[in-house]
Image 1 (cartoon, helix red, strand yellow):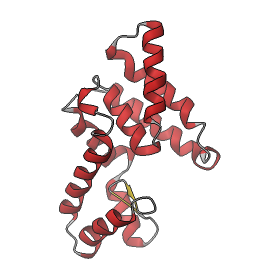
Image 2 (cartoon, rainbow, N blue to C red):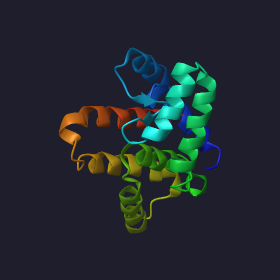
Image 3 (cartoon, rainbow, N blue to C red):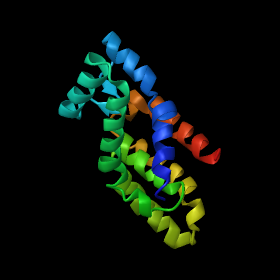
Length: 161
């Protein structure tokens, strides 16, 4: 759903990524992620954000730039505006966090066809599929608890409203 990008951005900002905490850790030299953008995977864009947020202290401008980047590179890539309510957030967050969105959508589509799952329930099935998929990640042993915690936070966020 089109209006759900803002809901997902709220989740990223305050729950899933905790932008304020990221900024504090970057300023302290203990993190390399700003507004959900990992400097190890997006070094050029991270440098732009760092320049704005840390060097120039233009935090709102940096966040807006990150928001536009996130919409273009995650929400729009998964066609979030065309997905059903709540399912769109799960798919976008899966792309953002682990790039397993194509596997997720394939599995959920198969479940939907097999069990005739209504669109308004797809998100809850997608959460369960995501829990299975995340365990297949090579780095699950190292980060598994964090992965699971994020998915539980996402479930609680979506279920609450």
